[in-house]
Image 1 (cartoon, helix red, strand yellow):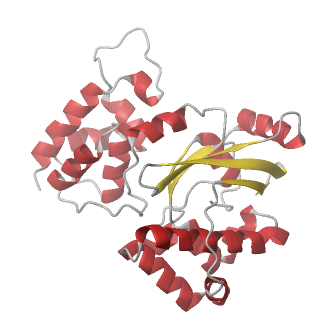
Image 2 (tube, rainbow, N blue to C red):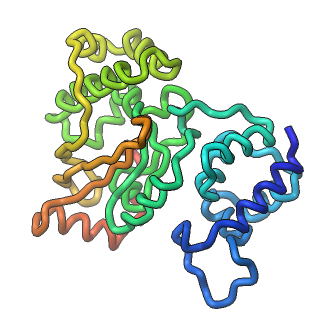
Length: 282
């Protein structure tokens, strides 16, 4: 661990990022070419005082904070790994909530400002949501381990299913299991994949029954009816783009032009994050 090296690295990376690169207004009077400390703190969901401590080398950030900083500063994978090393933290697995999101995928997400969009792993761990996705689906829970996966919660926590109408739960269960078997086919018995399969086989009779059917199918495009507490049921297209290694997915939701759901999405974009029910989570 070398917190002074971490502090220097954060300062140099902050100076390199332009406000427009991360969706911030440039403004007429800027004293620095890159981001200010308060802007990095805002992007990371931290206080300016805490981030200042990091740049002074007087605080050791958590794994989750390092992951958020890596995204905010648009670090490459090599830069992310270096940041974790000098901060004295182990590099996180590719399938957990602290997984590194490639800057290119983040750039695409930010270009979908008027569309609910999110980046998830192939094990359905939410990494990043834009404001409209949080308004539509609820904020991602601050969970670690297996519970970070929506797929795992789907089979172990009944309340997680409220995001979809009850008469479609069987369809989504089938799709989740077939999608997970495709992940197994691609990644084999990697630790995070084996862990989720083994635990679901132990704790969920429904998952076990479906797993034995041997169905394999990746959901590249789907029609979803999503329950939003204030707006009702929205009938949406769910589209996706995969990273090169297939371990991360950019999802975005659209409605047919002129439909009732299109009007509901318009209303969602107006009211934004105004006290939406946080329970239905993706």
